[in-house]
Length: 306
Image 1: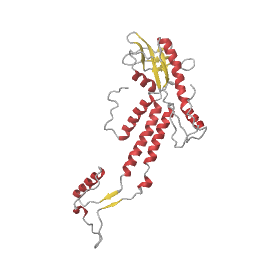
Image 2: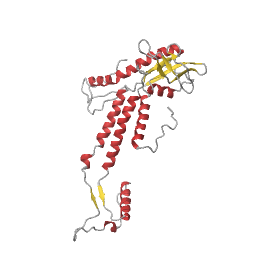
Image 3: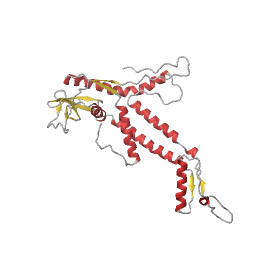
Image 4: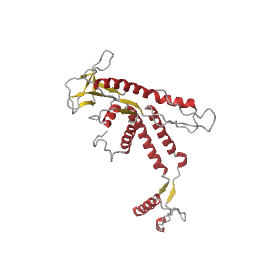
């Protein structure tokens, strides 16, 4: 969804840019959850439609004399017998109605969730966790490269040392330097030492980058399951059929709530507008997990019932 320069974050702090990146990335993964067919070609931009549906959770649709059948963002109005909104307030640059449009008579609503909320909270929550992991991964990567302390007697020597380290960091196998740079530092009598030493912090013991990368992968896996995408579990050993069914159950439940809400609202919208808009799951290629050939445990992961 185009947002002008509102999403331009170059030069912003790393954590801000990281969260903005993950919000865009997770939304682009989420927008393929359902496949919509039959959307009117005129005045129904698919990108705007999906952005509004997933972020707001619902869109008001009605017949316009100027634009024909249209959808617009709106806010619920009133409370009916069953404590559901009875109308939609629409106030956009294109439509400024003086009163709410009555649902079922003057407009209808395409709903993704039963409670008139979007599912952007899932994106926001996971993006926050991934941003924190990005910061930790960055710090772990920087700390893993810090292993030496170097003393310099003056600014000229400091610049020379920095240049040597930069050349070594860029991949040169060896660097030739002036012997004067390694002048002996006399402490007492003939005791001498070179002007640098290793700063041993037991980096191997404190190197947690693999664990952080695994935590990021786990967070992404949880995101997929939360939005109803079937994904292989993050375990190295072979899974059994019962485990596969359990993993599928985790992804099926909430997505089915969204599907039921979509199908019921689309039925009313199609009757109201005379359209034939449909929504269906965008199922990936069947995931299978085979064991080492043990009989009875190498069945493909079953597909949950519709």
